[in-house]
Image (tube, rainbow, N blue to C red):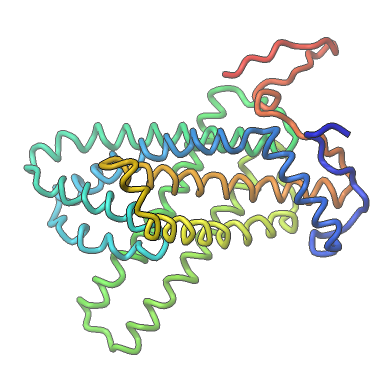
Length: 322
């Protein structure tokens, strides 16, 4: 067995929850081999870059659009609500960006709104496209969708992600303002604010389920093979965010090393961890399915996923990443 090969299947099972601990360990070894073969770390870095390119102009577009139709100052006041799910440095850079935009004139914001919106959507589309190709690779499939179909699929998932992002913003930022405005009873307010977290967690699970089922170019797998990754992914994401928050707070050398770029690097790291965790969740689901059902488990590289290495006549085919 090669260094990059996954452990051979040892059993057949009807669900991932019927595997033994030893079999789960074999599955985790397969996840590691798949992550290395499919270059998930490198892809996550690229997704983080496009995420950065999407977040900053996206914030500018939101502030501009809100400012055109009303008072946008409340946006800056509610940014702190995201401190529970993102490191302080990430929250601070978003807050500083919002406050800088609020000092600009309405004419400047209006002219920049369209450009920022287009740039944000284009960047998000590129990041999503690479996520879908990576999920195809971890599912041992070749990406045979035409370029147009790839962009259409990425566009659908991008809009889906934007919709759930709006839900998260409403839950974390708008809900406290609305409750204060209607003078809700203190007990009711505490209960509703506490319910934000399970709702947000459910939204994250929904993102993972939809992404893992329809993102890769393959026949949609049964739902039972998607739940482990969909449940573990949000938990690992919160743990990774908490660990990054702790590291940034407790190690002042980070700020000293990067200076004025520290917040930008922190945002990139957070986006990188987010992408990597979601891709590893997809790899876990694929390994569980292949292992339990006794399917072939040879990992596929990203290049092989983008373009198969074998031509229809069986001869080797030159691989070119598009």
